Length: 347
Image (tube, rainbow, N blue to C red; front, side, top):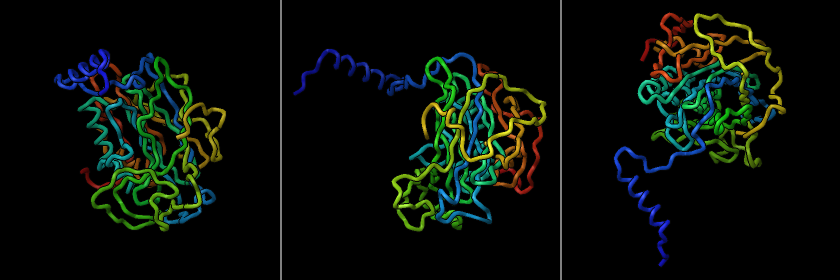
């Protein structure tokens, strides 16, 4: 029998006490996620689609619709919140977004998280990326208590497939990371059983968990991503996060402004890449909006996040008015977005 040392006994007693005390979590705090960075930080997110017929020839969609991407829908948040999570069930909002590109329910879920558990600092989006190899860019803000980034982009067309990032920490100890490059791979939301990009609706009953799609999974020859001779799928998109020098976010009222011309090609500058492997532009410029969180997320905003119904041509970003104030997850009632009648009445 193993001898129980005094150190082991002490650790056992402490663990036992923590597990029985009310209101005290038994699991230790993730020290890597404790952000001590000062002030706020502003980042530029550059998304580059790499979905070409050369890289993904099988079932490559050429029309009705051709290969493209939905809007980027993202949030900055604390560790106790997830938009989506691998090996977990997709929420109703993620289901609707990944199947149809509709963001209304997802926005309401984010709004609820901001109001009830104060986990969400802000949300942002871009217009749809209407070509599989085009790019989009937007900006967002983070601060120490909400230093994580998550976003989701629907693969269009597809049954319920998407790319994205879950809970990427932009803080490292006492400073903000400067540049991060991530390769993106397809995920299945687990809500539709279609095998191909253009499969008809085929609801998954019971719902499956979110899984990563690989060259051999799902292991069915009819699957559009099934390439059994490949060890790994090539990345279908890439995202570059760059910390900007200007940490200010403008308040309303503002008007769309011209942003810098984004690269025309399908590659993001490799010289800027400094960390992990893991914006809509048809070779044009785009404006950007930043909005403080202070009144309810309007249904018109969600209309800009549908599959290429091409509503607002600006990027949208929203945050709280003060990182230290009471979280109020609402948009200014005076600000009106272009409405899309096809959304129908609010749920």
